[in-house]
Amino acid sequence: MSGNQYRLTEIQKAAQTLADAMVPLIDRMTRNCTNCYHFDHQLEVCKKFAQKPPIKVAVKGCPNWEMDIPF
Image 1 (cartoon, one colour):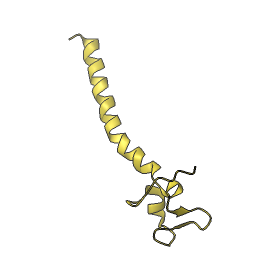
Image 2: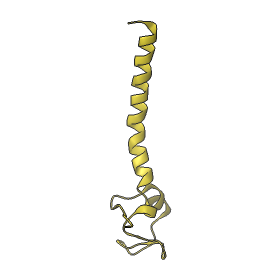
Image 3: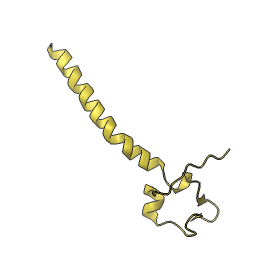
Image 4: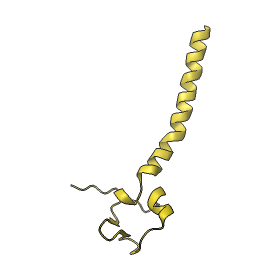
């Protein structure tokens, strides 16, 4: 294996490691109250639990998140 080929293989391994770590983080970041089926935007409350979600839940999401498809 040449030096360039070895470096390319190592870069590919590093890129895959980063992708494997980032996908779950991005998934959690996009599953928050603003795009959840249960969130009432006018009242700013979670309809499932009938209360305003704590800021950590609103930002990080919760296990009861469901996709809100607006059409």
